[in-house]
Length: 251
Image (cartoon, rainbow, N blue to C red):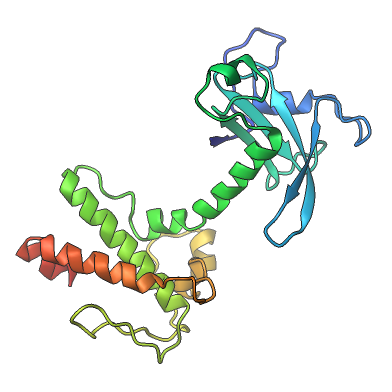
């Protein structure tokens, strides 16, 4: 499943619908009692609350319930199509009862299921931008396969350390295998003032805690394993397998 933009288009004859945005605008919505092609969907959240959304099956261009790929538009308001609560999704999950569903190895998915799965993506990608941009997850090009794997492990360790630091006080101690050198600092530590890039976005970040960009750690409990143990084990294994020069750089 992938998220697309409303401007996503395809080759089409003049006078026919050629983009997801055009399909959404032409779905004959008049009111909740006369929704046109829109289908009412009730979303249920983890806290038990519910919210009404509206979903639309795109039947234009390369998309449709009888084709390999489906495009689904989901929104809280079919009139204004607000940016934050309007999703344009493409999926290979077949529509229930369609000819594709009978031949596909994938389980058929209703509107409710497609929207539920898309909602889960928000949690999966919650910290992806910070890991990719700030911690350098994407900076592994033109390296050997072994070097890429080590780089990814270091980024995962760095994220775990930052997450742990953000959720613990000054008095907490972090113990790595055969070492006690790692200690958290105050959560009031400020971001460095010499931000190289300019622009309003960086101005907003100036003076904020660097860890405020990370997701908060979930509450501790008997069934929750802390992140530090995994990070320490990854780092220890990486140091043991790395050449001498790399090991000194890691530590």
